[in-house]
Length: 276
Image: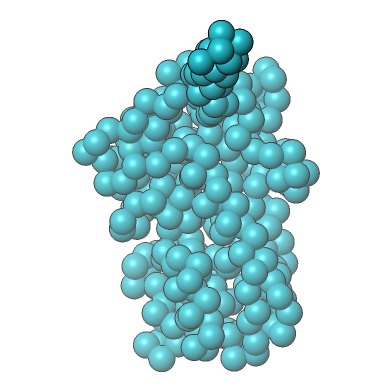
């Protein structure tokens, strides 16, 4: 081979070698969650599921409205636009229209596909909570309604195979210091309410982003919100990290929420414990 050809071949091989040796840009390395946890998930996956529940499109009709007893005698109140009592927790979805967000259902744990199928078959579109339902607990769960409640929503976001209520979630989580909260972590009050943390809303860590269903201002569907952390801790919220959650060994500071998603955040200056 001509010397010039040999030199050209060597240069080509060197160039190819250099190109293949350069690592591709990737997300920060994650430490896997506990292998004995009921599921394995990353913060990005958890928040993507929360966003899917918050924006899921569905079209209900008049037959999906129920205000009264179902076939088993359980009282159901769908969060449709006709729900006016109490006025500060009025309903929102419109029959005949494409609505977004899977509605709140006391005791609900539906996946989007199962929810759509139930609505198509005439199920009630959600079932709001009430003091009477809280007293009755599981006896107040209607098989005639479809949707998710706060713990059902968070359990789905963590890919848990079965629903874990607010009293059961601590058993699959580690307790945290509030300053160490990261996207995918939880703020939980046993027997009351739980939300999914989505990141810091202020550089000084005074406010957090979170997803929840059953809390102000849009009580009866999942949504992204921001609130002062101190106010939430004062209500009794306990910081938790799911045992199966992967995490960064050192915080990268990279935003998990996109800019377009953050434009839809609802500001909650006075957070509550969710459902009445």
